[in-house]
Length: 304
Image (cartoon, rainbow, N blue to C red; front, side):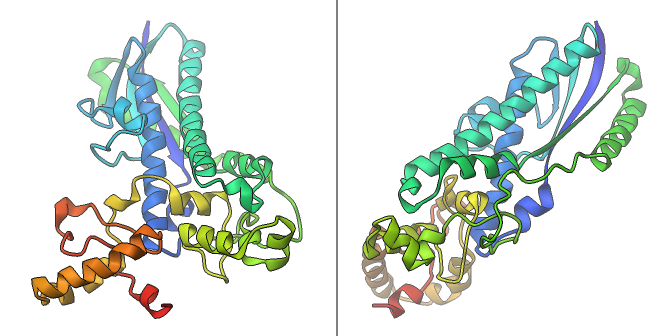
């Protein structure tokens, strides 16, 4: 058997993470990459003659890939030493790792689509799936090496992976319908939320005003905003209550100055808004924000 130093890269990093209006959008883009990379690492871990280099072999990536509490954010490049009889056997193993990543992303998207019954608001599974399939870019490179030659093999591997990324395939988007609004987060893909911002479409789907408003609140959707499949997932996927929104961080110095009495009154006022899904809870940062464990977006009071 031959030892191969293997690297599998998941992307696109910049366009996946940067497109967002809310802090949640930015966090979820990074979280998605971490989950997909976890699935690749877990698939390699489950094979004989494979030793992971990073993410750290001490991380329980299998539990994280299955949706458990993340031990750490995992970078978008997985590196391992894989022993295989030949390059063809190695390619098959890499293909299985890539398929694990695709399946993980598909499971996240399916969960979001089913959880809030988004089909009720005119989101068609066909176009949802098309957009989902356009998201990931995965590249792999490998180099045969001997244990005493790791440094030069690592340098060569980096060069090969960089070259592979620069020769990517530029495939057309699968959802290529024309004359539709684009996502306001990045302008790339067709929007799928038009039933929530277009009264005529909502009426054709027999959606009540209350149902439209409820879905918009869940998505944090404004009347001027349109979201594609990725944008919707960024609003709903993951245990985002562990992520402290910027609005809550900003308001914290003022809250620290309040008495326990005032804080209790604020908590009592906020609870109904949380139960109505107008605000989100804050559970991260080791309990630092528990004096008022909500997102701190005061605009909800202005409407009532």
